[in-house]
Image (cartoon, rainbow, N blue to C red; front, side, top):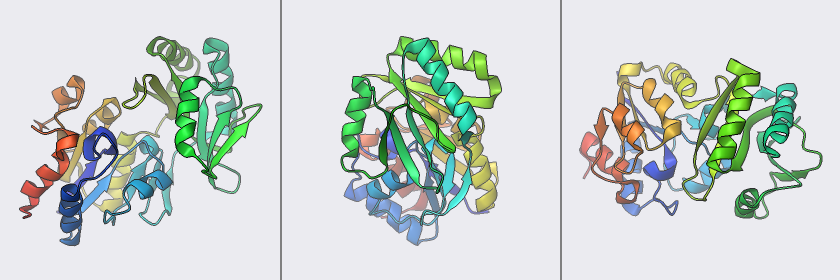
Length: 277
């Protein structure tokens, strides 16, 4: 049975400046052209992934938005785990009551178009993130902020303490109907807390992708660096952490690479794995 390889992007395959080196691009593309099954699992959207990976050969389905969505390289939706409008509105209400915060919404509108909806009253972390979406037609302001028909991610950006308090309140109210991912942002001085459908995470997405790709767990290799890869590691046969990964992920890895993301860790592993060069 053919092996399937799945890598996280930020701080794993991508360099810290979000670039892909000529070396990593060469190794990836040569492996794909040889028939190897390579793909990605990321918190980023389809549009963001296609922009960042425009020079990579992508032939396998992609895990997007932390596992909420699986899409073909051409953008066809293969699976979506979304929060409905009712529970989305309840989460927004709870967040404001507990922390005085309004979130960023990532979802599909009534026509199925991907939207990023920002509250009119934003904190400085949201303002900083919004600046990266200059002239992006997917971005909308909302006042009042209301959930969409299909909410893929509900995202809070604040301090570690505030997001921890909000996480406790949401878990108490919604229990197992939601999944929460909370971690230090690798680029900004804040904590990201993402609220998802209970099955909208990388581990559930990988299990579905294994079915789509017709590979079993023992023939799946994953690469990661952070908290949102911990679940991913539980659904793969071989778990590999890059040198800059958090200690918790390294402890659950089968192998810790001697290279960081800025040293093309994943590509170095793949070059040896496939005897490229």
